[in-house]
Length: 252
Image 1 (cartoon, rainbow, N blue to C red):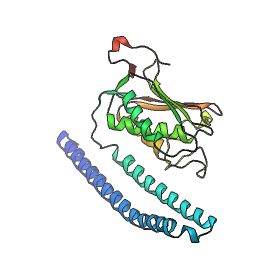
Image 2: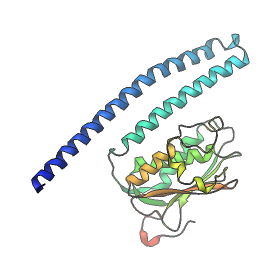
Image 3: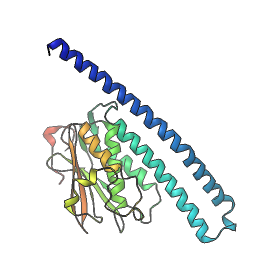
Image 4: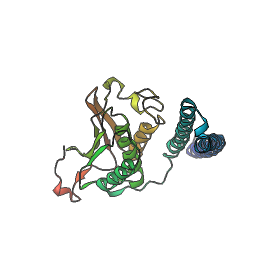
């Protein structure tokens, strides 16, 4: 095969791959639309019954309806996460100097505005910076910080900062897990807690890993059962305290 034939084959296969990706994306959006419509109907009907007929229902019937609404919300979240996971390889990517502390503080406000059985305590180390896409970094921190709150059996405690090696960390004092599962936690739908105990789509950590890889970095956990878990992120550049690299000081 000469050079011209090789170039022609590469072009042909590239076009075929682009066409296949476009068809897959169209299929995913079509499926997501078809799934959302019946979910909206189920959710709307359940909410109407809860609002207008709750006085005529037994306690168990009310709980069934509430559970139905929760399941629908979980399915909607799963659809959103699957679409995001699919799009991450092609999403516009612009890494720049960003304040990890500001983004984590914004996520903290979002989480604290929700209804929790026990209000979380979330500590954000000040003046942490790194090179990353700000939108994708926020998605990472939201998934990791939300998981840290979910997996804490008592009052959730979460810390976000940067360690001496330039990795962003999200640390909790939750249930922890055996490190033999360290690789599988990033696989879609792999959960270390029963679904009934911990809500979620089972896609969040797969999204975190995909975003880290999109930056040319990585994500990894360190965990001790009964003590807690720390997830680390390396993105497009090392994290540090202070914008001037010469002023770097350890936060570990």
